[in-house]
Each structure stands twice: as C-alpha cells, then as structure tokens.
Amino acid sequence: MSYNILIVDDSKTVRMMIDKTLRLTDIPLSQVHHAQNGCEAIELLAEEWIDLVLTDINMPEMDGVELIRKMKENCLLEKTPVIIVSTEGSQTRIDQLKQQGVQGYIRKPFTPEALKEVVENVFVN
Amino acid sequence: MSLSTDNTIDPADILAEVAIAVLEKQAFMFGERSPKDELITEAETFCHASMEFSGPVCGTVGIEAPVEVCAELAANILGVEMDESLSPEDAGDALQELLNVICGQSLTALYGDEPVFDLSIPRLEEVGCVDWEMEMAVTDTIGLLVDEEPVLIYLKLKEDLP
Image (cartoon, rainbow over all chains, first blue to last red):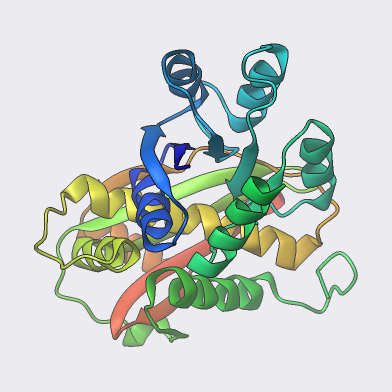
C-alpha cells in the first residue's frame, strides 16, 4: 500500500522541504499534494483521496485550526489523520488540538528523523 | 528557565541564541553575535521580514539580511545549489519562514510553554542601504555574523514601541 499525503503551508519553502524529506524516507508514497492554506486544502480534499494531512497552523485565508474543524465536521474527512507541523510552542494549544483529534505534532525546525517517526506512528496506529 | 520566572534574562540574549540555533538546525548555517560596527557589507539590496505576536505580551520580531544571504538560506533549506531554479521569491519566502520559526521558539524560550500567543503572517519587503543603516542604528537591533555575512534581528515589545 502507498499513501497520498497533503502538505498545507503558506510557505513554499516549507512545503518543498517536507515533500523532499518524505521522499527521502522509506514511507511508501503514491502522491504528495500541496496546498497554500486551509481553503485550498478543503478543495483538494474534496477531489482527491488523502491518507494523511500535514498542516501548519498560522496561514492566511483559512488557518490550520479552522481546517481541522471543517474536516471534523465532514463525515468523509473526519477520520483522515492530521499532523500539525508548526512553530507553535504552547502546550495549552497543542493539548487543545489533540482534543480536536489531531494525531501528531512536529515543531519547526524539525529533523527528517522526527518527521518520519511521527508520520510512521500515525500510519502504524 | 524563562523570562516569566527570571527577570534577569535579557530577551536580546535569548533571541540571539534562538536565531543562531535555528539557523544551524534549519539551514546548516553557522552564526555568532557580533558588534554592529563590525558588520560590513557591500550589498545594496536587503530583505526585511517582520511579524507581530500577541498574547500575555505583544510585540514585533524582525530580521533583515542581504538578498544574497537569503538566497543561500533558501538553497540550504531546500538542499539545492544556489543557481538551481531558485527565484527571488524563494529567497524572501525562506527568510519569512526562518523568522516564523525564530519567533515561535523565542516566545517559548522567553515565556515558557503555557501561554498562548497568536502570530501574524510574516511580512516581507525589499529595502536598500538606507533602511539597513537605519536598522543598524536602532539600539535594540542585534547584529549576527552568519557564515561571515551580516544579519540584523530584533524583538520589540509593545511597551517599548513608540
């Protein structure tokens, strides 16, 4: 089985960095999609089957918190795993996001090993 | 230890430490704090990124660097050669992302991991030598030498803003 992954971040640099890091791991990938914000992500999620969403929090138009809320409201998307990739350092907010159903959290800057570990944990579980 | 528990910590020291650590981890670039009068550059164009944070305290954090340094930053983060399909937008985007990470990490280092801060989207502008010299003259602006190239960084709390 190979996975379709969606990377959501307003920074092209970050999207490219995560994309490259994922391709360097042995995680079997089918397609890696990119979106610049939550709005683009929702449009893409309506068109493509996505196995995992990696999203930033702080983005224009629709931020990561709103994206997660909209996914949880949608019966077709509510079970799609979400990992936060963010500079967010507040444990209070991370706990809130986990209560909303976020499966993993990676703080920037991250190592390729850290990204691989969190992504693999989500797929294993 | 954070500023919330120890008022002897100088935010400028924390900002410099965080910036140096993030540059090394994210872009494999090595930096050190430097007196501003030793920051010499022949660059004529600079990228200036800034963003606001609000929470228990509010303020602005910013970074300014020669365009060439930003291009090297982008190349290092993406793991590509400098001349390999990198656009000026990529250079600016890399600086904005670097600032985003420095801001988040600095706020945790200064205030701990309990407070919730809202961060704005980083803004980017291209500026010339006049802006660089003006930023150099600001007392709270910190000078860094990053791979022997000058970089300016600052954190201004709202109570300090004019």
